[in-house]
Image 1 (cartoon, rainbow, N blue to C red):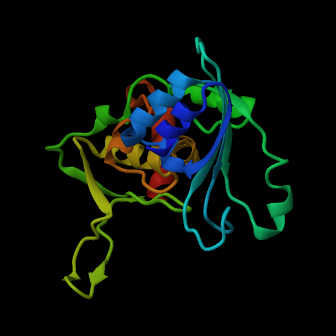
Image 2: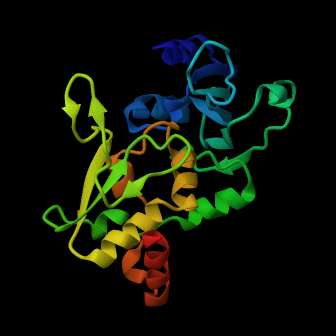
Length: 238
């Protein structure tokens, strides 16, 4: 609503908003993203976490600073974005001036931040990880949907105790099944990788890495060399 009012009030010129990071990073904000693409010609997007420091002390909210130029006849939309920022209090005085932007896809709003990251994003295309999962498979692993600072894909059910419900499986762990042990360990290895963590920060709101994001992770296991699979499985089991 606030974004829509801003667009209506500003007929032409520059618009600046400090808004939840989910505004540019989740499917549920698709209507806002479509409106931004329609109304804004050039954008600068910077994205900020909440730890170890945050933009506004006492406000535990991941935020995006969105600056856009609105013209009367938008034809092409250009978006420049920075990487997801985590910083310490000592960096506050230099935080904004040290931001590095890179051109990104206006339909995705990836948090690229530099040319290398943009090229990596462009290469992450093709088949999705969903192709290896089988709802009736006998090989199971557990995935924690809130990574925070490291990803957790494990092949055992971790202990969890709730004062209300007693010992149970945490609702934050989701079950994935495959039809072969090889696919299970390859999928776990991919999801536990630094690439998957980078991808999550690049495309998400920095909190959830849910089932849909796992299924849509760009990984073509069928095209992997056997030697790479063997090495990945070995590392995963360790």
